[in-house]
Image: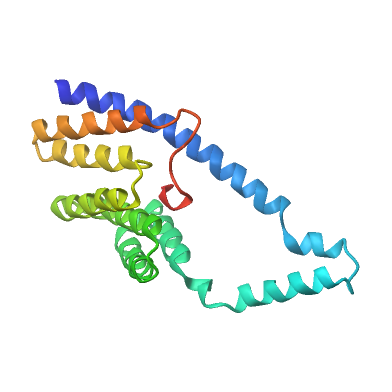
Length: 196
């Protein structure tokens, strides 16, 4: 009964978090449209040294090795996950995880682990999902931040609830609530990698 009440509290808080994430995505999309360098370049004299420097940087970015980098694989993995394709999501997220680890990008590593855990949960592989979630929680400790911890703890609690381990679920629901309460109310607390 206590675990159910806590789960309802966490779900209400997660709905609020999801709304904030949606607003944040819309804001970021607006910034991308407003900040389009090509549109800005068109308004300057073509012979300007600034324009030439920006064009050179754009060419390097377009041709650079990061075109299919960690961000690409994590984003595409999450897109596959949202599209109901957990197998494809896992394949893409594994590639993203390898790149995140090789580049020491802990935020991307956490995001890939979290999304992979959700994919495994969707497939009914609860033990694998738990392992990945505990790794994501460990990554939070390595980052020395609590941002996103409430999602990790909430998912761990949900899995324990699915497994009928209500005592363990209650412990992690408590951790999720404590983590959410500790974050600033106007700060969504997640990097763009963590948005699902």
